Amino acid sequence: MYDLVVIGGGSGGVRAARMAASYGARVAVVEEYRYGGTCVIRGCVPKKHFVHASRFPELFEVAPAYGWTVSSKFDWDTLRDNKDKEIARLESVYRNLLNNSGVEVLDDRAEVAGPNAVRLIKQGRDIETRFILVATGGTPFRPDIPGALLGITSNEAFDLKVLPASILIEGAGYVAVEFAGIFAGLGVRTTLVYRRDNVLRGFDPDLRKDLHEAMARRGIIFRFETTIDRLDRAERGVRATFHSGDAENFGAVMFATGRKPNTRNMGLEAAGVDMEADGVVKVDAFSRTSVPSIYAVGDVTGRAELTPVAIREGAAFAETVFNANPTAVDHSLVPTAVFSEPEIGTVGMGEEEAAAKIGDIDVWVTRFRPLTNTLGDKPDRIMLKLITEKDAGKVVGVHILGQGAAEMIQLVAIPMAMGATKADFDRAIAVHPTAAEELVTFKVPSYVYRGGVKQ
Ligand code: NDP
Image (cartoon, rainbow, N blue to C red; front, side, top):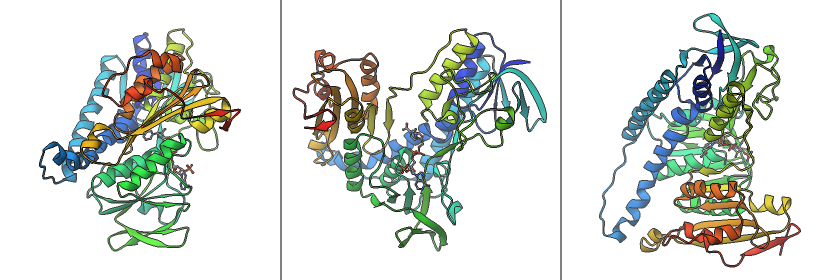
């Protein structure tokens, strides 16, 4: 009899398992694929390596202004194979972390066989447990169109045998804009097709506008207000027919149309676990499902599909169930980065949301060319934006687009979590010359909203 069986060896599951074991629980983790989950195996980590690879050409471009002469040539096989080696190393790190924490590591497919039983499919046996944690993450989804299987998803994009000469990416969320930047940076002619009118729906409007312009400057082609209706094999690649009527051939087509939770055929319904129609597992603030012995964390719960959030939820679960310390995760102020080119760091409310929810806000925005771009004579500007309650009040949103945005936003998230005001920001002395110093040197608002209306 186990105290805990975790289904899924990704970020959330591994953290929960290790912490529960540290509190004395007898724990097993069951994973059918590779330990580390989406983030390590086919998400954040390999993606960031690809992003780094895609950024070299821009450095080569400005190099002559700094006195360097560079001749460059890119080899996809080298990047992909080195990425594979690094991912294999990280997977073994994850396995060792579990082993060293006293967690039993099972390589199998698991299904829920009842409130206190998990079926190991390959081994063909059931194991008993006091608690089950469902941490099975999500998987990319393809729209239901003819020829959909001719398109790849991010899963396959990481392992392409050959880099295509051109690619069409459908969607305009995190994955779409990140991969558009990667492919374009690696020299692939990149087109992005999206059913609405601009990238990153839900983000601050200045981030969306500036990112769209910067992506277009990098040669990315946009087809807005349409979708892919069908895909057919073409002589060299795939032919996409758009809802707008026209068609075009591409070396590859990638769907970045979102993700669905991995909850199908897992025995959850039969065990009595309540789920949304799309397979999201319903949980309370302590990650408990409708079955008291079954909990769920991470992407399956649809709260925020981000690794650090899953890790927090896994830790809070272990704290609640195995350390008698009920802990709920606050999902209200989650900083996040989009590794587009240029990258985005964002925390708190966007301008539209803050105007609607608070009414009286001050907006402080600046755009300027960072030093590398002045000497290198490149047009890209960094954008930093602060949204505060009126009269130097509480900072409710910070949005940055440009080099270093991801690193900056992590640090800004700290005073924001403490409830800092604009006056608190202003007390900090600027670090010069940096881009981030602008966050503490704003003198007058760029514009204000009163009663939700821009003045
Ligand atoms: P998103 O939900 O962010 O984006 C999906 C995109 O596909 C949207 O533009 C959506 O349009 C569009 N779409 C959805 N369904 C269809 C359809 N049937 N036909 C055409 N277009 C469609 O999903 P992603 O896969 O990009 O990312 C999933 C999550 O993973 C993110 O929300 C994020 O939390 C996480 N992630 C985080 C990263 C990071 O932290 N840097 C990186 C990558 C992923 P619409 O806007 O109209 O809904």
